[in-house]
Length: 322
Ligand SMILES: NC(=O)c1ccc[n+]([C@@H]2O[C@H](COP(=O)([O-])OP(=O)(O)OC[C@H]3O[C@@H](n4cnc5c(N)ncnc54)[C@H](OP(=O)(O)O)[C@@H]3O)[C@@H](O)[C@H]2O)c1
Image 1 (cartoon, helix red, strand yellow):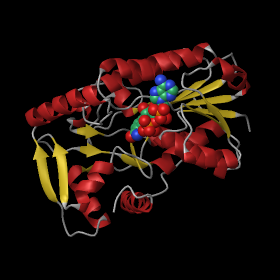
Image 2 (tube, rainbow, N blue to C red):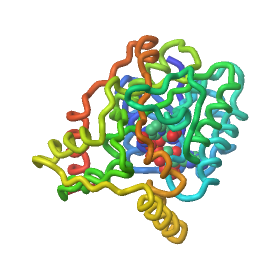
Image 3 (cartoon, protein in one colour):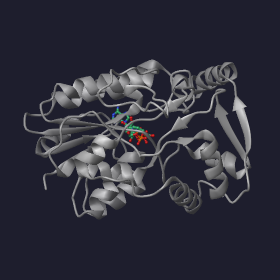
Image 4 (cartoon, protein in one colour):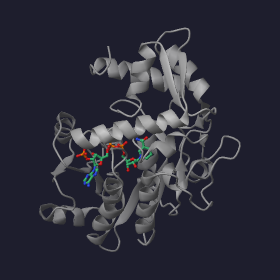
């Protein structure tokens, strides 16, 4: 097995990638901006930690040169201000590519946000022209375009991910424990939700075999409606039902604006800001992952109900939820 370097290893998906690689007996190099107890533990399990506040960092150039495969997972997914998305997705990708040498393979952790939304009855397909709707989506598409120039590259566009260590879906669990379910927009929305363990396994598969550049969608087969998600969450938290609150688009816009302004003052990085709002208002985030499944044999490992229950159990064990 070639040496693998994972960028963004201190983040949600990056941490699962590191775990899976270690479980598989690999010895990944984990690139992160700051140490965490989990990274230290992964270090004791055989990972090499490359800590640097700036990436790429001159001190780690020799390490970067050793990597046969670079899994570029670092990226900016939320927070206020368009510039942060351009910097953390497009420019960071360009800087890393500028330091690689021919022969090194790059696997970009992309997002369906780069491709744009897809309705449940017309899931987005890999050959369709991208049509992102948010700053995040545009910056992820720009990162894809950087990587597309690299001669040995694979782009994996993941759907919405959830699981242990995820803060994105945490408020939904918090509300569910209070018997509440909030949704943005008036229409029923459909999305594909994948547990982070399965997503990480898809990346390991892409590391282990020759694969065309893609961009491949990585998602479970069946989408879930917001109504279905509400019911699944109710079951996970042991309630007969959750009270459904719909936040109309105009109110969602005002909320996102207020949250964004507050975040600029406090330095917080909330998930709902004007830069991400267009993503949250789409009627569907559905995509066709069949080509990836056919090419790799990958399958999601757990269904939504099981995944939500495991995530809730983890949040409780970790003290993130009571
Ligand atoms: N979560 C999802 O639902 C989802 C869905 C589709 C695709 N993705 C993609 O998956 C990847 C990981 O997302 P995630 O959910 O795991 O997000 P995350 O928890 O925020 O992790 C992102 C990681 O990237 C690092 N990072 C950000 N900007 C950086 C920079 N300029 N230099 C170095 N490191 C930087 C962060 O470092 P710090 O910890 O130091 O901030 C963090 O460790 C992203 O590329 C994202 O677009 C995520």
